[in-house]
Amino acid sequence: MYPIHDVDVLLLMATALSSKRRPAELVEIVSAAELIKESIPDEAKLIDSFYRISGCGLLQKVGAGYTLTPMAEEVLSGMRKKATTVERFNGVRENLAEFEPTGEHPHIAITAEEMAEAIKAHKLVARAPGQNLLAPKPKVAENSNRRYDSRRRFGGGPRRKD
Image 1: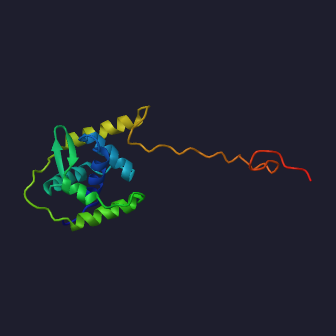
Image 2: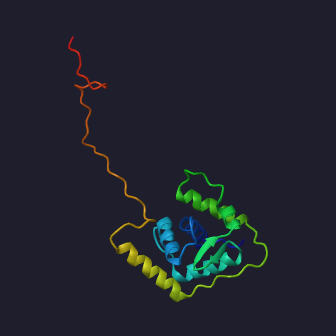
Image 3: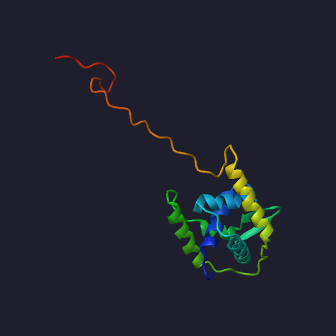
């Protein structure tokens, strides 16, 4: 597949993240893309990416949602479980560069209005109070006020006085 765009890799990763249990809606894919890259790509780039990726047979429309094809899951496989996001991104890019599309596949055409509506809906959900399932969980700050009490032993009992 040539050329490889960053948005294509991001779209594959976001679709994989958001469509684990059922086909993902456009809003969920946009949310996952923001979670991965920490910003939402341009609407036109996302629309072009949907068209390119679906034409290569990596993305399919199922009902009102989108899922990865078995070929796309193959492109995304082979990553270490503890790989960072950058390592995963680069690994998927390399696998996508080696991918050769076979046969004719239907293109997914998303209108600019649909994409704008999905981005707007995502931004409204992001501002709303409550939990977003795709948002990262905040880390609990450790209590740095804990100090080792030199008068106490490891077992919890007092020291012997000799």
